[in-house]
Length: 98
Image (cartoon, rainbow, N blue to C red):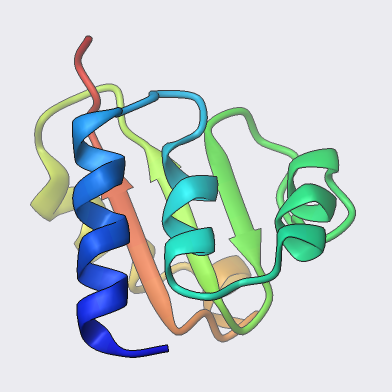
C-alpha cells in the first residue's frame, strides 16, 4: 500500500467521521484486513475488555479519553505494564467531542 493511498483513505475518514467506527476505519485505511477488524470488533483480538479501550497485540492501543488532557494520558500509558506487555506499535488516544 502506498502512502498516497493511505493519505486518501484517512482523509475520507475525516470527512465521514464516525465516533464509534473511527479506530476500525483507521485500521482498514492502514491495510489491516477486514476479517481482522471484524474479529477485533467482536472482541476476539482485543486484549482489553474495558469500554473505550482496544489493544490489538503488536499493532495498536486505542483509548477514548474523557478529558482533553491527552499529554498526561500518553505519559501514563507509556508506563503501563499491561499495555507494554503486548508491544503495540502505535498508541492512539483521542478526545472525540461530538
